[in-house]
View 1 (cartoon, rainbow, N blue to C red):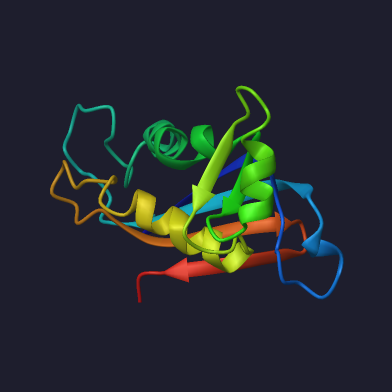
View 2 (view 1 turned 180 degrees about the vertical axis):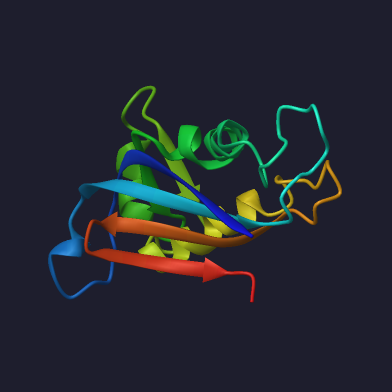
Length: 147
């Protein structure tokens, strides 16, 4: 069985070497979908009976590991020295420094890496993270899958 939880957040970024508009500082209303696989929990009398995982727990973990850190932050590539230097002049600015250029593809993989292992099999139902889908816009997204 597969289940998916969607969360949204706002963040800025730029693609430093892009040939078009994305080379400029700008922002997006991102959405992230976390897909887990596992068996449906059959233990009678527990809150999670009939579920792979409680969706509120899927949300809590995603918020703790990714969404709260990236929401209303500027996601900047460590190699983008000019922008990093600029952001450091803004007192208290929320900046997330990444080792990769913050494309949808790289952000999907970064989110997968941050979440992988966070969803633990606590009910013996073989729970595991299968896919992270990161929407940069409603029409553009990237998937990073386990397989």
